[in-house]
Length: 55
Image 1: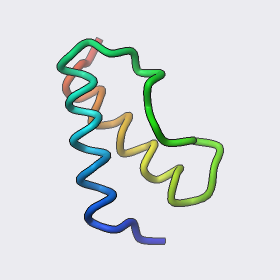
Image 2: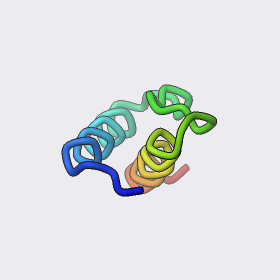
Image 3: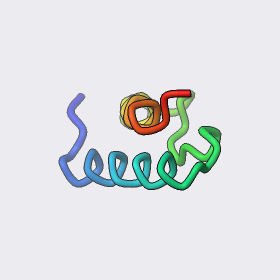
């Protein structure tokens, strides 16, 4: 399954925003237990979040 570019950009932008503003990682808007699209976006969101807020 491929995720649309717009969805990817939204996940990256919101993850970066949350990390830079010290929001908790639990604010990920994507359900990791959902469908394949939601899982892929959750993984992307968490990866970007950890890149900008490693600890």
